[in-house]
Every structure is written in structure tokens, then in C-alpha cells.
Amino acid sequence: MEVEGDAESPKQRQVHALAFFAGVCGLAAFYASLYAPSGAGNWGWYPRLAKPAWAPSPAFTGPVSTLFYLVLAVSIWRTGAFRTVPFTLAGFAGLLFLQSIWSTLFYGLQSPLLGLADLLLVALLAAILWLTYHPIDKLAGRLWLAYLCWVAFLLPLNAALVYLNR
Image 1 (cartoon, rainbow, N blue to C red):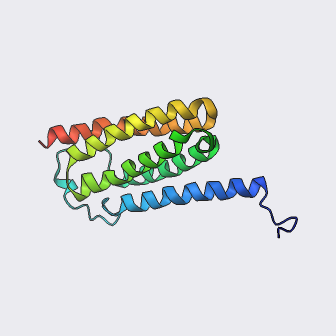
Image 2 (cartoon, helix red, strand yellow):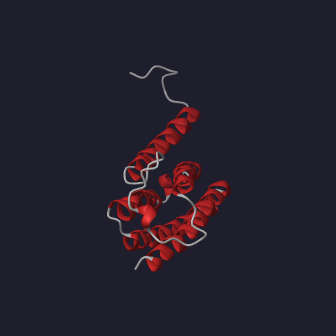
Image 3 (cartoon, one colour):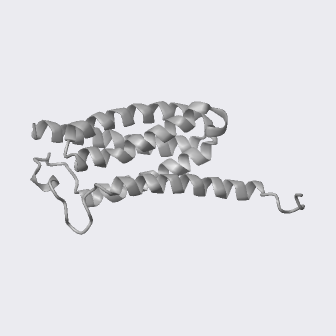
């Protein structure tokens, strides 16, 4: 028997939904960090790669990438599109998977080429999702666009690493 007042308020549901998406994105970020260079300076094979002059340090790209996991969580939560557009939840899950395995492919397998292939898929799926989210919620669309700009920066960087280290 449900007692009046026991039902979750809409505000509580919103908080729980945001916490759920933040948690899922946090797990994806944690998985991605398993193969990423550590902040303690244990960079493994990466320092030996030839890099373009404009390549930032992993000490910069790691935290920025982690921040974008939170951006993704807020974006899907704001749109609520996962409730009405079935593709968005599957697309979001696919994007998180592809984003989180990049460090496994790039650092773990030491394959900039596999990392590049993965990033191309991330970029394609992110663009499709941006087209879906932008009309639903302008802030979510802007957050997604910031993420797309980040991926657009990472793509030529990863491509340059492939080219310079072939």
C-alpha cells in the first residue's frame, strides 16, 4: 500500500535521473582511465611517439576528456530524449562505449590507428546525436556541440600521430 507522500516528487526523479547518468558516465570515464597514462608520470609508450607541435600533454587531455563525460551526462539528462526517441538512449550508450574504449585501443593496444578508427565512429555518432538533441533542448545542444568540438580537435591529433608514427 502506497502512503501519501511516499511517492517520488518530479524534482526527486530529476535528481535521481541526473545521478544515474552521471554515474554511468563516471563508470565509463573510470574504465577509460585504466589504460590512460597516469598523472604520476608513468606514460609508458606514449612519450616515444613522434607528435605534432600542437599536441597537448596527456596531463591536459585526460582531465578535459573526463570533464566531457560529465557534459554528456548533463546533456542526455536535460533532453529527456531517451524517454521519447528510442535511438537516443542506444546511441548514447554506444557513444559512451566507443569513447571509453579509445584509451584501451590507443594506449592499451598501443595502436593510434585503432584509436583513430574509434574516434571516427565517435564523431559520426556524436554528430547524429547532436542533430537529435539540439532541437529538443538548446543547452543540451550547446553542451553536445562543445563535445563535438573536442572530438574535432582529437581527430586530427590522432590522425597526425598515425601519420608521424607509421
